[in-house]
Image (cartoon, rainbow, N blue to C red; front, side):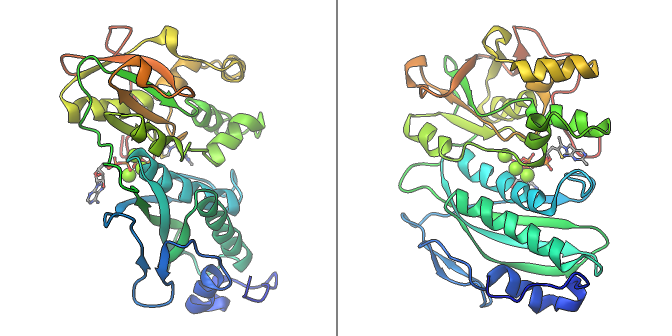
Length: 321
Ligand SMILES: Nc1ncnc2c1ncn2[C@@H]1O[C@H](COP(=O)(O)OP(=O)(O)OP(=O)(O)O)[C@@H](O)[C@H]1O
Ligand SMILES: Cc1ncc(C[n+]2csc(CCOP(=O)(O)O)c2C)c(N)n1
Ligand SMILES: [Mg+2]
Ligand SMILES: [Mg+2]
Ligand SMILES: [Mg+2]
């Protein structure tokens, strides 16, 4: 890019705040929706229909990622992906990211470069660019990203629209990142398929607008765990949701990893977070797009059940617990 290459001894402190900002901004190709920025006090982004989707998620070193588990580029990709998944979950396509970065003074410039490069790669894969942000010193690496999105004339798909009689369907992986977390937590680095899923989620970005166009009544991305997240749909919609385990695909890879670790692969699928699959309700089976898997039904009542019974144990990640 436009900035000179760092020497191995460079840190973010030697680059300086503005040197670091240049590494994010100079020579980057912005999508057509970026009308102004970065570089001014704020950026200007086009919205096809005058509405902008906006969402923020914060990632903290040793809470959301570890630098001995993931490369800085993988961390950058993950930080961008988890935010753009929330845009997709509204039925929108990501347009722009604002990146707040806190890092210690001795962070190597090369680490910052890789982080930035990962964010740009993931953003570009979904059609978005980085339009601004903030750089601060911090004791640990902290990344706070705000993602903006474009509804392109469609109505947002909220958490509150599920109706009794709807079907529940998912698109994307479930349980893979949790399996990867279990593997990494035990000090292993393989199998790479599940470890890779923990390092960098692959949210099905285009499936968000696809579900919206197909008439999805409610949608969410699975960040904390399937049961926890569809619980938010159930609460917001004033309905009950039942997941049928005979409809859940537990991939052979998860079964193999679980048996090696003495874990339960079904628990990963039902309660594992960080894959950022999309879960949505549709008014009838025929409305579910072909590449989505129907896994349950919406009923009268409240809460989430699995095969008609309450799930024993935690339904997903919660901070401070
Ligand atoms: N500090 C905050 N100030 C205002 N609203 C907040 C704050 N934290 C969360 N919210 C709002 O609460 C709602 C739920 O937040 P939550 O972070 O659980 O959603 P999410 O990003 O979809 O999930 P996850 O954080 O697991 O990815 C969102 O609408 C979010 O914007
Ligand atoms: C080092 C390390 N320890 C634990 C985890 C597991 N983890 C952290 S946050 C989260 C849920 C989503 O977070 P949020 O709700 O903030 O979006 C999960 C499952 C991890 N990824 N890395
Ligand atoms: Mg959040
Ligand atoms: Mg979400
Ligand atoms: Mg989120």
